[in-house]
Amino acid sequence: MFFRISNKKSESTDEELLEEFTSSGDPDVLGELYSRYMHLVYGVCLKYLKEREKSMDGVMQIFEKLFTDIPKQRIENFKSWLHVVSKNFCLMQLRSEKTRDEKIQEWINNSVILMENEPVLHPVDEEAPELDLRLMDCIGRLKNEQKACIEQFYFRNKCYSEIALAMNIEEKKVKSYLQNAKRNLKICIENRNETEE
Image (tube, rainbow, N blue to C red):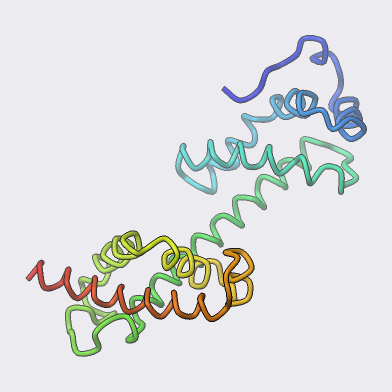
């Protein structure tokens, strides 16, 4: 599923493979070492992330992360170290998801986007969870530049200058895209509410 295991290296110890990878950077060597503990990594991911697909993605992302992490570390026991890396990765994923959900909720409560005089859209209203779906659907309908600015500003906490640099545009363009995106989101949500009445 993930890695090709070389018979030649299967007799090597973890320490030998780790040393060989550190000196050579050979992905096959790391793949051989990692394949020994993939079930452990998957188990940790499943414990924290709860879903098979997310856990399988986690296994791959952690493997990719090792290419940069291993050279920076002094690793005494690879298995124990990998367990800690896997656990920390999962906790960061969960924290990231929580932050994203909080940002969506912040948007729902934001009167700039939503009509203040619309009782159905009040944050404490029973229909607030449905609004999450409406908002995400409306974000998906934005023009690419507006959507990119919205996602980076609100969901990734990037400032105007960082977004401008990432998109290779001027800061005033970023502000303009964000303003237009907010206006379009408000219109989209209002239109969807009217059609659902």
